[in-house]
Amino acid sequence: MKVKSINFKIAVLFLAFTAVFTLFRSSMSGIFSLFYARNGILNVNISSIKSFQNIGIMVGLLPAGWLADRIGRLKVLALSSIVIASSFLILILFRNFLFFSLAELLYGIGLALNSGTLIAYITDLQESNHISPNSQLMGMQVIILNLTTLIGGNIGTWLFAIDVAFCNKRYCTHLVCTDWLRIISSVYFYCDKSFIFF
Image 1: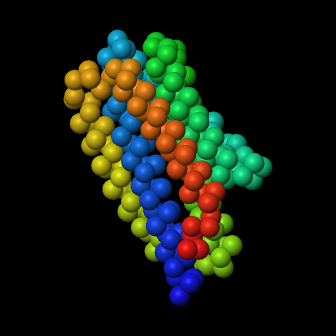
Image 2 (image 1 turned 45 degrees about the horizontal axis):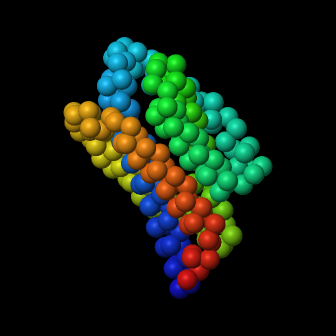
Image 3 (image 1 turned 180 degrees about the vertical axis):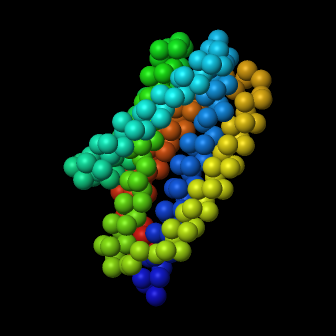
């Protein structure tokens, strides 16, 4: 009974963070495009800027596993949120093609550092509690990923059609604060492992 309870809490934790991270990532695409357009960036240049996110993902994936083993998965999760928050700060402070590209690069690196770390951490939790990997949980993750990507993409597209109010400095500051909340929540839930055994 205790094993089932622990397994359930691990599954809920895993799916909740998967949903939050995926929704956050997918909804940013339209928001970033709107922000660039409102700051005088041409559509063709917006595509060039956003390509740096893919470069960042490739760069970030290379050291992600090594860093997770070297400094710990929790620290890598916190580091990824710090990198993403830094990209938002660059968007606020420096508004030109060069710094927008740098921000997208950092954003991609942050996403890559985050990618896989959560799954590996959940696997560690299961192994430490002698729980075999759950194929149903992996199936639910795929469903959650697809749903939140769809919802997040629609949110981003909807925000793209909204007036300039979503492009002011105050909104960008809100994005930074939101990402720092992700840092706090990650540290709280991941470091306080005892909540799993309630």
